[in-house]
Image (cartoon, rainbow, N blue to C red; front, side, top):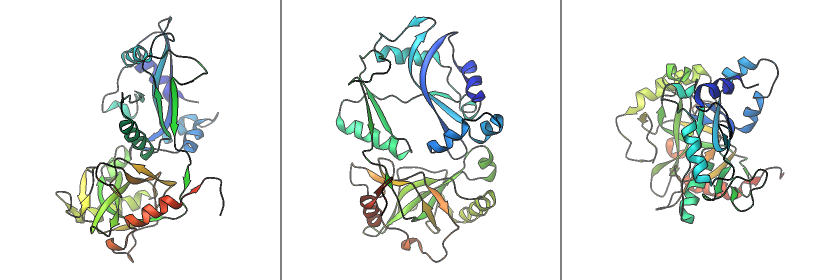
Length: 313
């Protein structure tokens, strides 16, 4: 089912024999987005395998090592296992990582404070992931049992966003692959902060439009392009191109999450709000001025009113 990962293992794993643990996710290299698990599940098939390989490329994230050249690593502490895992994988260069070398080591961060763990958790959730796995650095590997050496931190509920958001385009990214040929891969979008008369970012959106619509949008944004961040735009992210906040588009998403990256609703030193799995709905809203976009106050209210999945009104 996964010939691309089989090829990658042969190309990137340095040992002759090893047992590693990881998880594969579909990743869109053109928009640099993780896609929902339902998309990843489409790779489980017996027919049309190569076609699906090109359509839904997988990225394999490794996070542990149990056997290395016939040596049992499970009794060793996590710190040593991770060092050996990093040494066992041939890293992908910037060009090859998007196709021929899709294996990566998961990002690891040693934290000593609750605040640092919370920031990392929110960052993962805002990227579309479920949360983080917190592990003791001195713990051995115990198959089938996490106990308190491994603790999975996930959101308590998964909110269902029932309404769409009108957001303003404030920048765009060139993208990769076919999107690079279009000159645009995704757009940075913001909502309106009425109290400050500013536009604060809430999502990077790269899906929902046809190729023709992306071309049309790229032409419009090129006319609105400016050399530096507009004064009324508040953003921690830096796109490939800034544009004046002129165009409003309707965006659907799975839910609103807290984010240390996006600035909508962000207090000093705190977290903002972001859209999880955002996608465009329709074309530019000519009936909306930028100041008519969804406001930060409305986003905060929508976040509080999200309905847990499976619950009906």
